[in-house]
Length: 208
Image (cartoon, rainbow, N blue to C red; front, side, top):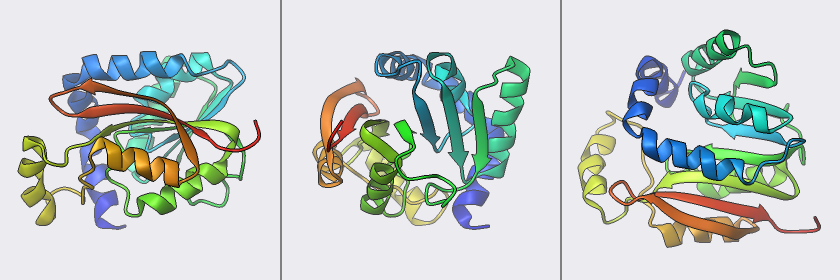
């Protein structure tokens, strides 16, 4: 188990409480996401955490697959589906590079509060592109904190290893990573100016 897995395993019991502090922004994220979903869509929730978002959108799509590197997160997510009697979600502890995830098998891939935490963003974007069907969507919510007070606060904490490494993007850099990954930006909106939380929808280029 690597350091990131251990960190997120420890965080699992606190995540819902942390998310409630940003409830207004998270509600906006789900509301805006639903506008892009179709009832026959197959969705991958990449970095699903304790499954809150997956469960929220499950009624709007055909199937959701939720993946996370933390076994404790997945355990909590599975518990929620049992409690809520949600039948069309499959939660699995794995990474996005799992070969069981088939090329061109998803209509939508969700990346909420995640892209600033991945180790190799271009490689991840390439993999997301591979997994999406032609014309498929990546829907993300990402704090872009380069040059912000929050970024200054988090840098030393991340540097000494108390939290996982963070990528300090601004919004232009994040959009560039998506376009360079063969995506076309559909929508960008800052949902929380204090945290520079950006909602981005991008479409896989190619024949639809």
